[in-house]
Length: 199
Image (cartoon, rainbow, N blue to C red):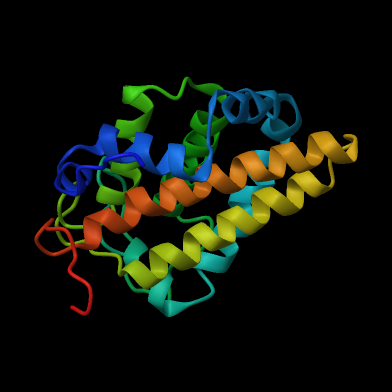
């Protein structure tokens, strides 16, 4: 039986990543499979991004988070939530970020730098990083990750690959996105302590 330092899971993101990856079986072979998807996915990422933002702008609970100034954006702001459209410069800015995120998943080594990037993908949506006035509730982050996961897996299902290769790719991305989900949700603990059962 492996011994796990549960306090270190809360304080050391690399230790946490390695634990979750090992637990669910995300390994170097999965990374190779994800990288092998690049040639199939690159041209389809823009449509995934467009569909994602179409959904995000269809609900006030998600769209409202694009009205305040986004970290790193210095263009015009939407005057109201109702005036926010998919073509607004701030939405275009956010679409570019999602595009880069998806490109990172399929094109970069899964090392400590990548772990920090995946962790920041969670942190940036809270007041702990970026614009302190942006505080996306966890339920909305779960909804977004669920949507992105479904879009990616549905896209892979359409690839012209043999069933075994397609299955390996779907499983690899599924494991990766569960790791990403953990690296988002960890920023929603109020004090960083190990949760106690029943609390």
